[in-house]
Every structure is written in structure tokens, then in C-alpha cells.
Image (cartoon, rainbow, N blue to C red; front, side, top):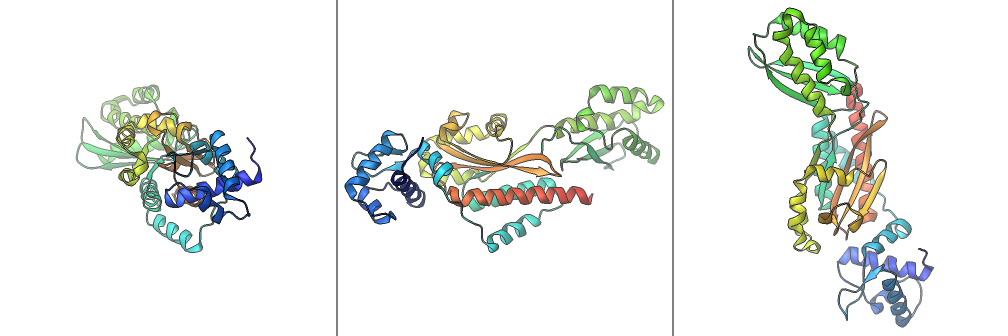
Length: 342
């Protein structure tokens, strides 16, 4: 679809007025804001044609126009000029994130908190899902004579842990044997290799140590499986209660947020860069009156997870898109730095 210059100026003005005020705009007010000289009657005709094209909507018979979901899409793709983050804004975001540097889980949690506060929307983040990740570090932490915590860190920043109970007391010899096996069989190995078959083969080779050591490696297999599954974190869902545009739809959205598998699928199409998903472009009915801005982050040169927001379609896209891009880039850099320091 191609619009003439005048229609584009009118559509842009309607969208930006509605984003700023939440109110429809009529031809007389629009005439005062346009950068070109044109009559009110001409503007009405152009707005009528934009409505017939599905780019504008008229909430009430006597009211002005507001953008449709299709109008937002055209605006973002063709008309919008992105804002530039100020140096102060960049420093503030970086300072807030830096407080959680060194702990991947806390870093993603903090990123969600920053986004929720900054945007007034619900913020989400997913843990890295690179299937090519390898095991970088494994730690055994005794917490009792027969209880230990197994901690694993992968090359893409995932940290998982599990508690196990052993049949015998954890001796120094058992712990040393555990680390010898970990060094030989696990460090540098793809996380996806650590499964039931591998653990059964390993335990079978332990001989007299099998009974004592097997619980440790069973737990290791379990946390390796967890590391391959993306986790979704949500922050600031309550922010959406303040957006009157949702009306009664808010209750369906809140219930939808509890279905993490559907939420994960809703963002799975974003495989690179940043994407804006508007209204009915979303996969699920519960999101058809909302917008998602989702960006991918990289860890160590490999695809990591996603960070973004869910809010009403009336969003300040020009401001939010560069903010999310900057935050996402920082998360990737800090996760990469954390791994390189290990």
C-alpha cells in the first residue's frame, strides 16, 4: 500500500496526537498542526479515504479519527522517526543494570524491572536457549552429611542447580571423584548430550562407587534438561491495569500470563533483531488488543533470549523501540562479559 504525501502527513499527525493524548482528532484541530497549508474540507476528505483504507477509525459518529491497528503498522513501517536516547538516559539504564552484573538470572530480572518501570507496561524476558551451549562449570556444594547442591553453568550464561540426597555420607574422596569425573566427562560437553542414556552408561562404569555417586549425576542430568528449556519472566503485569484501553479484556490477559507455554510461543517468531507485533498480528486472542515489542539479545556471539514489553496498541513506539534496543544490547554485552570472566 502506498499513500500520497498528504495522506502520510495526516496519518502521521493522527497517530502521534492519539499516542500523546489518547483522544481522537478532528479536521479543524489537525489543520493547525500539519506542516502544510490545506483546508479543513480537504483534510476531512483525506481522513475519510484513510478510514476506507482501514488506516483510521471513527470511535463515534461526531468524533474525530484515531489510528487503527493497520494504521499503527503503516506508521511504524513508513512514517515514524525514532527518538534518540540522551546520554543521561543511557547512563541511568547502564547504572541500574550494572548492579546485577555477574549474575545472569539477576541481570535478566533487573532488565525486566527497568523496562516495566520505564514503559508502564508488562515486561518479559527469556533465558538463553542456544542448543549449542556447552557446560562451562559444575560445582558440588555439600549442605549436610548426605545432602548436596549441584550447580551448573553453561556457556550461554544459564545457571541451574538441584538438591540431591546420597545413600552414603559425602566424603572428601567422593567429592574428589565427582570432580574428576566432571572434568573428564562433562566440562566442555554440549548440554544436550547430558541425558538418561549418558548417565546410565556413566553410572554403570563406576563399579563400587555407583550406589554412592549415582544420585549426584542423576541430578546433574535433570538440571541439564532444565537448562535447555527457555524460562519466561514477567515483571509489572499490574501496570496494564492502568491502561483504560483494555477494558474487560484485562482479565483474559492476566489469565493468559499464567500460561507460560503459550506466552513463549507468542514470541517465538521473533528470531532476530527487534520486532513490533500489533494487535491481531499476535497469535492469541487474548493479545489481539495489545502490542508486543520484542528484541533478541546475543551472548558470546550466539543467539540468546528475548526481552520486551506487552502493552496497549497506543504506545510511544518512537521512544520505546530505541530504549528496548539499547537495553537488550547491554544485557547481551554484560552476559558475555560475565562468561568471559569465569
